[in-house]
Length: 207
Image (cartoon, rainbow, N blue to C red; front, top):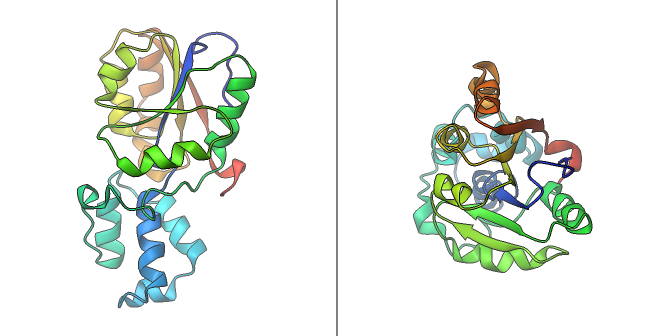
């Protein structure tokens, strides 16, 4: 779990996509429940769909949905979908509660663009959680000494471009993180006043 003992103790910011909600997996599971006419989707179990989603090579879930099941997905068209944005992982529920009990009261989830449904889902946490949007560079620049939880290669690389002291917890469950793990990005971040650690979502379980 996240170490709140020193750097990162001012607050927590968690990426919503794939840390809390696996939006592409939710889409595939929904289409399967509606008997979408795709042989591969019909034949795969929910567990197999989950494993495929975790092991996808591209961060963008729309690429996985198209290549695996020929499902066209534009996230902009699903911002009001309760199904797409429903939480899946227990991890942040546990982290938010632990942080709050350790005196960290500033707890946020984040997406680059505003998603109305997330406003509803943040009320499901046991402690007060708020919602931030906007480019992660600007968000972290304004939140000094926070802990940022992410699995996004795009946002991890953006962290190299800010000089704000932060802690970054990288979730390497997803195959699309392979290059970040392999190319010494963590060491590059540590050279720019960042505390970097790795963690996993799977061990905390699904909701």
